[in-house]
Length: 131
Image 1 (cartoon, rainbow, N blue to C red):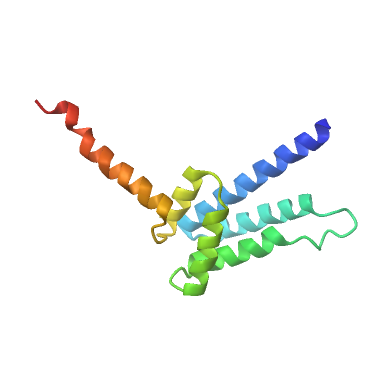
Image 2: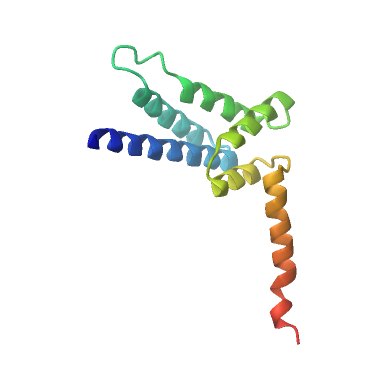
């Protein structure tokens, strides 16, 4: 049982590393960052495949390739759909907002709520300082 918990933690950490690597690539667009994404994706795919057929599970590698292409060509409407789907998959709100900002995504309902909170916070910022 302990081994399965350790493996699950390892997978979770790898997926988070993958998401952060994608965010980094969205910010930098450097080939080295893209290569790092693919290395992490291959590691995750190996974790998800059975010992007999390691080549069968390629979800993260395939998805990484699609996402990197979409990030690079974000004006393409088909590519934008790929990015929107990826945004929906990200559970961590902070990571999702950071990725959304990095790709200059269209405002989603979650972002518009966050934007409202920021604007309201900016207005309330000076409230206590006025006399």
